[in-house]
Image (cartoon, rainbow, N blue to C red; front, side):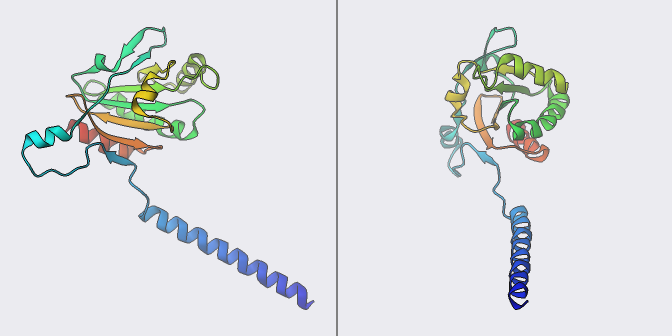
Length: 195
């Protein structure tokens, strides 16, 4: 009987320890989580505007394809701010953030270009599977297919989802790795639309 009490006490202590660790993790995770949105030119420059301009990173061009297989270049969208999102239909975090992208696209499509770039590898993700997913969900934002990995390689998008924010002059202003919520998406949009 004494041995059973010790085992029960140890089990109870273990449960309390795990529960406490979970609560601590949950509390600290909310207040100390990293900011997913990182500025591309994070150097603070108090010099002249020309020094500030030297720190800007021009967004490199890439080629993707629309649903019909027609070639589309990032440079086709110059002149308005651009939000590029790399995603795949098998990616759970990508699916979680898509309603926010749809909402912002519906609200801002006349003033911002949204390019939802599907990581189309031809096996795990195909144009057909990605297109069916978009259609099933009722999304109407522009979807492009990176069938040759040009965009992914150019932007170093190795993790999904990844989002880039490019201003109207073609400069990469910020990027986010991982799923973002509507507030973070809006902060990125604010960064590329400020005058």
